[in-house]
Image (cartoon, rainbow, N blue to C red; front, side, top):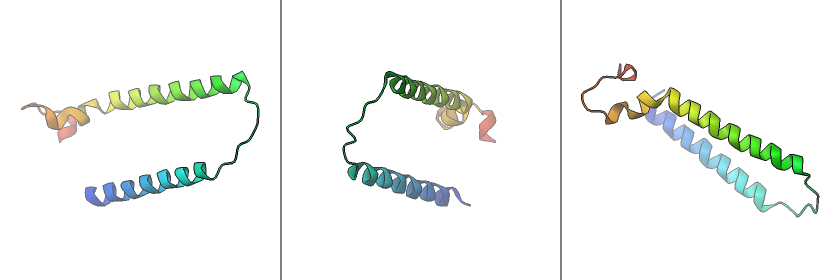
Length: 79
């Protein structure tokens, strides 16, 4: 699979996911429900875990991300 085809497919999946979420949120009725404090802690933990995961992924792929912008140095990911 070529890189252009893969990026086009990824873009299509992303647009469909965002469209599905937007239409789902547009059709929601008010729940009039109580959310206990433990739920806020769960959402905070989810957010912090996502940020930590993103930082680990960025650290693992840093050489591949910055490789094309470096001058003259060959990185391991440039092979």
